[in-house]
Length: 141
Image (cartoon, rainbow, N blue to C red; front, side):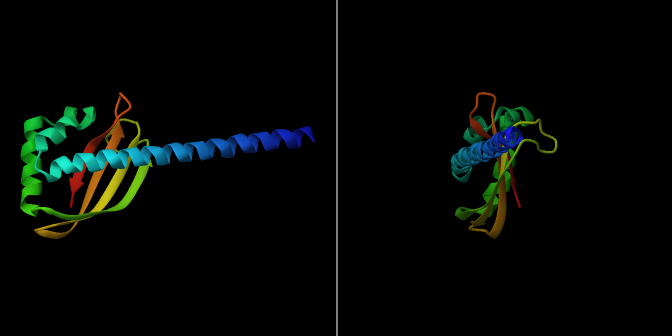
């Protein structure tokens, strides 16, 4: 009977921890999506310098502000105005190739622009050192 009680407690703790972890990841994913949408609003408006200012420390360490402004303008301007953006997927992870371990959410959007009918935008927010979710990567194809 005592062994059965111990097993029940172990199972409760194991499944309880799993539920807690899933809930925490869902909350993190929601926060990361909000950060991504806010950041994309700046990019959509052509406010590339401000988007760099609002990006993660990792992002800002990897590319200078002026380089980001040039690259973002060269990539986004030919696409024209955003017509629609629909969430395709959002995946929580603690590791990404070429990036330090941490908390990331890889978010993909199916997007349509005035001059490009179908594009996939990948935005990767991370939880920065201060606990705030900020964009650490952006890719469009």
